[in-house]
Length: 344
Image (tube, rainbow, N blue to C red):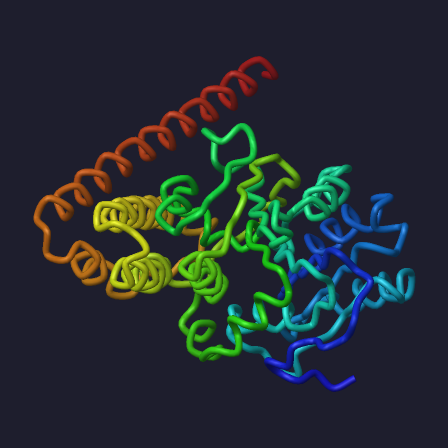
């Protein structure tokens, strides 16, 4: 079957939930992720859960892995492959377009599910309507928001930002009703995804339009961390694109100015933390930081207080991480020395 970019699936589907996995050159992680899903009774039943994988022209054994599962589950497993590599965010969009379920759930290729995750999500989706029968959109934050212990409703973008602490950028938390996704994508779909964070653009547009969300912070999966994490420009994504979306909501009257400034602080702290990680552990991370300080200044809107906060946070965070790294190296050295002397 020839894959058509940005062509929404029009099929009438029996599936309530589509787990959508965009992937590239992570066959081992992907295999563990798929196994954690297909091993569950809710998937084996074959009636409510669909698993969709879109390969971004991987050069490893990803096609072989996916063909194996396609052979085992031909009616509930969908696999397709980009004819040539595309920008990662475009692959995120395209895998959602491939899905036929009522609710589309993005899933990292390194996100390994717990044994009852599908059943939990199905129960939530089956009861996601208000008193008038209008659908409410679940947001599965996967235990990443420590202060949320039970489901919390959000009736505005302002409430959502206040409660989620920037978790909206995490693709593993994103989910949307298929009809809402297609409606949003009918409005300038290419721009949002080519600029990165198309899923956040979709989320914000729905919130700004008055859609209701409920945050479920239950732990449903764990992250199978890859050996080398990164590959994208942290400053561009979080200081340019994410704050641009927040600014758009502020200009539209959907969030307060104080909420926008709060997101600026969170974003510059988050970016500076990864900047330090890249400095201290270059073999573990492959993030980009092009024009990083310029982007920080632009994000701070020339506010000297925000700039001061950034530099204080960056240097304090760097010293803290450096001391941890030094202490860990010293402990490992002492253990090795003790082992050497005891052995001799």
